[in-house]
Image 1 (cartoon, rainbow, N blue to C red):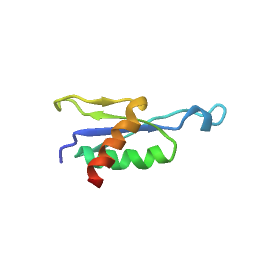
Image 2: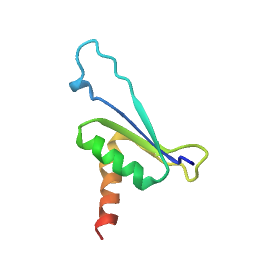
Image 3: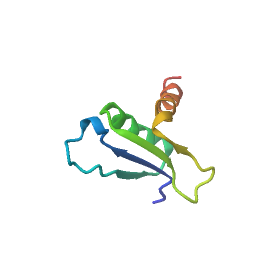
Length: 81
């Protein structure tokens, strides 16, 4: 099984309790579509999400929290057309 994408997520600071650690969790996926589906559910839960390709996959892509809505919207538009 070859994993080419990852999605990292964590709770936003506003949802953490005082003194609570902020561990990140990362999941790996075989396709970008699988990664986007998972990221969409975590985004809907209000979690901080980052995603990208796993090295040495080319072209390298990294989607930061700020670019997440556009990346998820892009997939949604392709699926509904």
